[in-house]
Amino acid sequence: LGHLSRPDFPILHQEVNGSKLVYLDNAATSQKPTAVLKALHNYYEAYNSNVHRGIHYLSAKATDEYELARKKVAAFINASDSSEIVFTRNATEAINLVAYSWGLLNLKPGDEIVLTIAEHHSAIVPWQIVAQKTGAVLKFVSLDENEIPNVVKLREMISTRTELVVVHHVSNVLGSVLPIEEIVHWVHEVGAKVLVDACQSVPHMVVDVQGLDADFLVASSHKMCGPTGIGFLFGKSNLLSAMPPFLGGGEMISDVFLDHSTYAEPPSRFEAGTPAIGEAIGLGAAIDYLSGIGMQKIHDYEMELANYLYDKLCSVPNIRIYGPKPAETVYRAALCSFNVENIHPTDLATFLDQQHGVAIRSGHHCAQPLHRYLGVNASARASLHFYNTEEDVDDFIRALNDTVSFFNSFK
Ligand SMILES: Cc1ncc(COP(=O)(O)O)c(CN[C@@H](CS)C(=O)O)c1O
Image 1: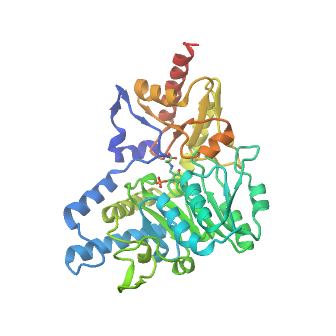
Image 2: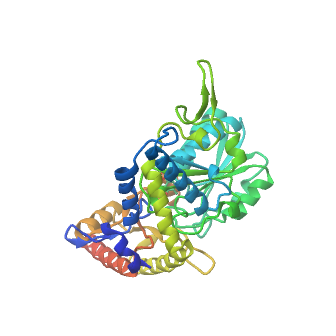
Image 3: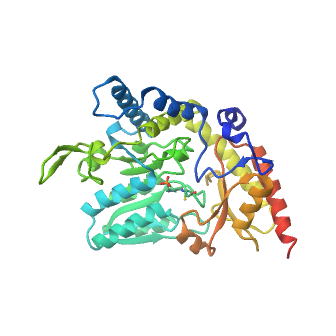
């Protein structure tokens, strides 16, 4: 799959600092196939127009394509209706929408919001802000002996005081995958809701929101071969219908008076102002592209690549890889965060880029609480997608060994 898809990604065929580019930073953002670039270009060249209000051909065409993109997102995650899909700027905004709209309406002093210590800042900070405003309290589950969020403790933490559980589907640092269906069942038993941060799962596997029975689920276009500037919130219809607006403005209203306004039905109620029309159409093209390959096929290929990456990385001297060891029953996403003894991860990433053209990420990956828990300030992270190959992994490991030797030569 890796070699077959690479011709679709022109960006991968270039040299960086005198070496062939090896792009292994896909958890930060994915690359875009030609089909997505063409869809964006075609929109702006052939039918750019504002949506929903115009009565002329271009506006009708832009509106049809924008709403078709919404239908594609709904079908991609098996939502029961496209009105359950709200376009946002990114997953971060989608979580903020739920926090400020659903959270401020439903949370009261003493209510509990349960998260894991491995959550992304985008999943933690909005709830800290809303908890301060409502008197709700945040509770965090730590990791088990396999460095996976401790779901046994998570179940014990869920009680009648729980109003919301916020969990990642796949960790952007650990590569661990949570049993969302089970968690949702436990949470619904106490009448609470679940928000699933699916940023690192929607681009890499089949995600079925009805199968998961998730109440809210968020993802970002730029991690799933789509443009930046667009993401989405899935929300069950009955929940969205009961939620007040997040942002006020045009589009989201029904009627405006001087002393009050009435609001449109979801999803428009949550899409104030002119949306990212071209980007939504680009996301629709990305979904067509991914669906053309098949998410199960992408998942199976990336599982093999994940195991290959993990095994090869283990061979690097004095390396510490965070997260679970891949096993028959333990799926690990195609990403590895790691440290090498006595070498700062940013030194590693810089040398890999400048000497070898290898693009990985270093830092806290917007997961500072997790890094503190792991006893480090930062880590290096290699993250793959279906257009990467075992050759990319071999190039990375060879470059990493050279980098480690270089820095150890100064000891
Ligand atoms: C699990 C998870 N949850 C939320 C986000 C935020 O996505 P936005 O598109 O920026 O809104 C991300 C994005 N993580 C990037 C940037 S820190 C990474 O390098 O890991 C994520 O991985």
